Length: 225
Image (spheres, rainbow, N blue to C red):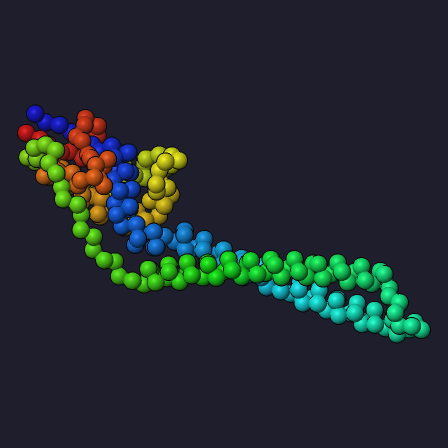
């Protein structure tokens, strides 16, 4: 009996997701989206801190000017104990703004420190070599196929690119992120699919949702006698 099976798009996507989860310490560290986001956030906060520091210096100069004016006004009076209420009100307002700016700058500097720690960790992971990961022991789910044509990277890529690009809320890996690292996932995914078809085995637990079942759909030609 001859079958012309194909691979479920969802199955291929889930397979990619499962592989991604196994290699997550390395793959996630190499995500350009995450790296760019952290760099942009750090740059934006650095610019904001610089702006706040400049504003704080401006307020300090204004406070100093008001102090000098207040001292000059007091010296002009006979007793030296009379103060300009307008200048005092401006001085209190500026001091309040100064305290608020210093509080904001302190919070931003702490946030920048956290971002720098994350960036340093990402850079270390990017520079570190990829360590091999041993797969789980396979378990039999049926008799092996007698003959089949192996799935190529191009065929698998075509399936994934033609699949739905939206991601459900429960999806642990967004489709957009999978597409960004597709060149990394393709060889490993294709190898797992071909091994599963050749041996009638599925790589247990972490890949149990990625079982590829032959069907009558089109894609490739796998023959079972």
